[in-house]
Image (cartoon, rainbow, N blue to C red; front, side, top):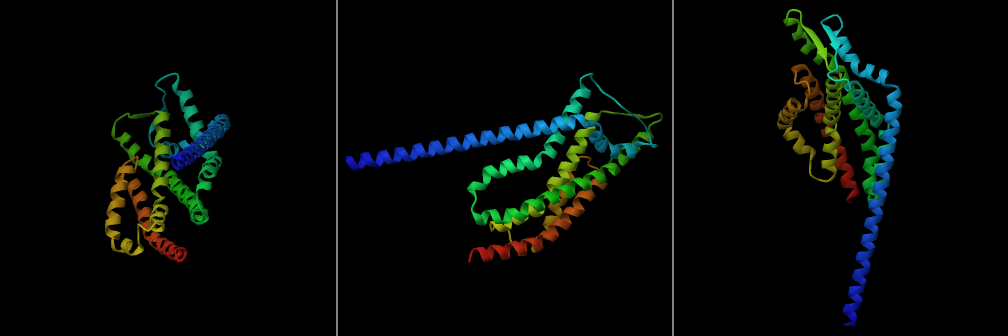
Length: 262
């Protein structure tokens, strides 16, 4: 009985330690989330006072596509809409400029749970991921002008046709376009991660490249916000190139993984 009582006492102590540890983790997570929200709020406040250049940057592709081609006007459907457009743009822009601090908070919470070996790949994968995302965003910004020009071209098919553009829907379109390109450009990072955990092999990538091309094309059809042929091709072709380049990157990951498991 004494032995059983001692074992029960130890189990109780272990459970208590686990509960305390979980409580501490939740408290840390809450604190980091609150700090992240404060960072975004500060960023949104700063961007609120610089709304005009930010919106000018977002609107430039449409302005270039429309000027001299069709008659157009910015139109608001409700008197509250201008304020909410400013608010939404400020929040998104604030999140973007404060992304390094938000990422640092996320890393500070995750890092203690990772071993030294698990942290090593992240030192170069994280910057590579950011570079790919920025590359996708830049390409989307460039492509947007041509996508808009293609759609706007149909306005001239209607006599006396005038375009009344809702700024909220346009901003949403641009954000979707840039986000879609940025996320899809993360393909090499995903493939490298799958190779690191042993799920993917470079040889299988070489053998199934035709299937990959078809899969990338199908994904491009669904995730391209504008759904025009030019924008789809501008997404699909670079991603196919990224897939081909990822074969070489996966081979490098396989060699590093083999050395780490010896």
